[in-house]
Length: 471
Image (cartoon, rainbow, N blue to C red; front, side):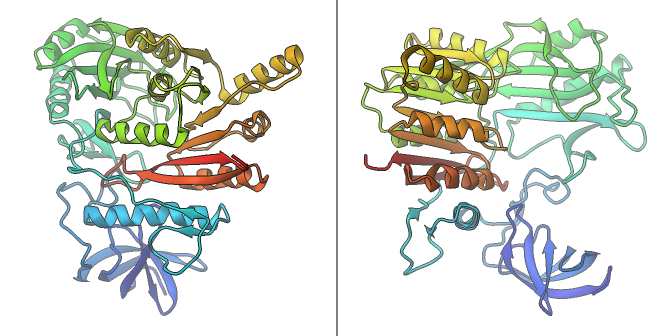
């Protein structure tokens, strides 16, 4: 096989990144935008020793699961890898994705609905999906750069790159985003404000961060800038305030040459600096720096699944690690005796404490620091003072994509809670950590509930309930 060769392949499977897998004379090709069941004409674009990459040239016979993408930028944009697949098929694929990770990386025998007649120790429940998997995102981060002819470019990054695919409307976001982008563009043109240049580190406007509360309709706009001031900032705030729902306008200072979007310093131009959203019985105040799930409809399903896995009776002491703005913590606090939350972002801890006060919840305390440092330190102090590990009836972890620190897993095992609830956004690190927690013989997996937080994309959230053996 050679580069630029044209071949016909049947798509037999998909990678975890949503690429179709086809074989030509036994040689595997990975092909973006291909769907399992397609017969496709493919141009070979790269050849490695044991595999290659292809570009989809033509679908000769479409898969029964293929559908027409809504967004014209679905191909070049890196955000929606599965738009060409029917939504029901997306849910089936994501359930299989969770099962494959647990089977391959965790070493568990798994029933994920794809294998019949196999006795399994772990059952992956069907994915909790959406009734309408469009316009669900309450957060939008729009990169701003310079187009080839020097014009201001706004949109989203192409897959595996920082090249901006220009598009005003995202079919996953709120329609208000388009008006906000255009308002910022006109202000930049009027004041001759240059967009950021990643390579040179010059220019001012880096990103536009937009957050909208689906329960209150409040919208937050935050401009990430490569400087300390924005020309005509007050006029920009006035223009944005004319858009219905805009309740907060701020600047975020980020002068570092980094891929990290937000800096630590905020300058408020208008409004209180927060917006309020509601999930279930709880209200949350969210700042530009707060972690908050992007899909409000599915977030409540996710937290309900975590609450169900925790099986609280009202008498438990719960540790919620990587707690963010206290979103899960407050759900847990309403059903337990005491909750302790741990989070590394100072602004998020402040938000968590404020959210507890806002909801009249007095049995939730929040600590600032890395979960892998705070809990071991608190545990060591408690052992020195009492001779016993800290009490934890339930530990809830919702770590970043890299999963839990090995030292933290060791402390969790030493504390020996009755239940552990693991909320994960990455199947691979989830499987790795579950293998550690279960291989000691101390815990077994009681439930696995995937929740589709990222319709049209490849991501999947999973809630796993573990029970201490003997319970």
